[in-house]
Length: 325
Ligand SMILES: [Zn+2]
Image 1 (cartoon, helix red, strand yellow):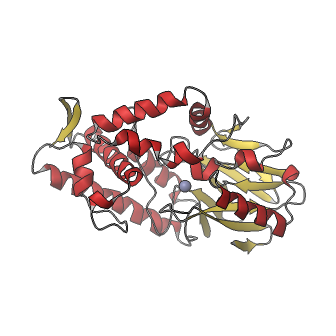
Image 2 (cartoon, helix red, strand yellow):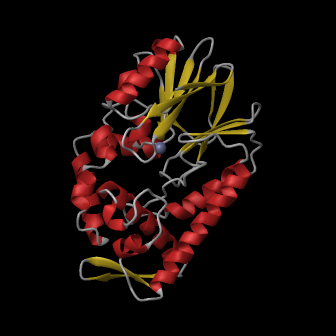
Image 3 (tube, rainbow, N blue to C red):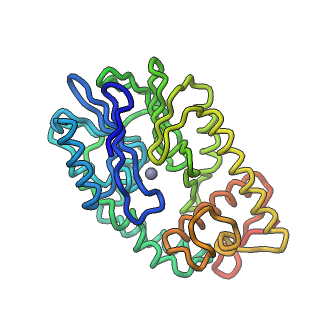
């Protein structure tokens, strides 16, 4: 579905069948000289078809179209190779393009093996199967793309827009938002979403994504914004109100985890299986494996945050990482 937001700016709603996100919003800025496409959908036939239709209906010349990815996840990058032309510039942040190249390079399998081991260490014994059915594993796959690295604060002038790139780590380590100060428009990627909370998950033990995320929310809070255009679901008209809700959500999640740990030490899998999740399934056992993995990753991110704040202890118990108060 194509929505004209204002002259020269379109929201393309690209289906993601079978995925709880339902759709991804790609944004097309159609300029006199060049166009810019923000995010691309997954590498699967339903997404290709939606783009084919949009390209035809809006008479988009792909040879005059640059592409920018807000983050490296499969729903944002999957069709870069399909949509890019020899004249396209492809923009992305350093951290996320590095991750993407790492996935697609031959040693990507190393990443998935490490990830499976990390899952097991956190009590998720079906980790390996979960990862094989992970959308990033199944539907990503742009061939080695030459990215132009976008630094924090860089401005891209295109199609009458002056887009300041704002690094907002959290959802991914190199997540990018784009801000046009004159038009007061913020392309928020997966940083600020309306109807769902962005997945903040940790799948390694090296950094603290929830802390990064909360700081990145502060980073965009004071911007003058009339229209926030997210990568999924509805447009946001009051980004500050939504930021406060998102912060509150994570605060409540932390409190929920602490309450559970009052009963004794637990691993991330156990905690995830007892928490409340806003999904259509009645109980944990019904969650498809990738959903379980996202949920566990989210719990690990909160545990890491609480551990670094000194509120939760972490220790090794027989091959499984345990947490306690
Ligand atoms: Zn996304």
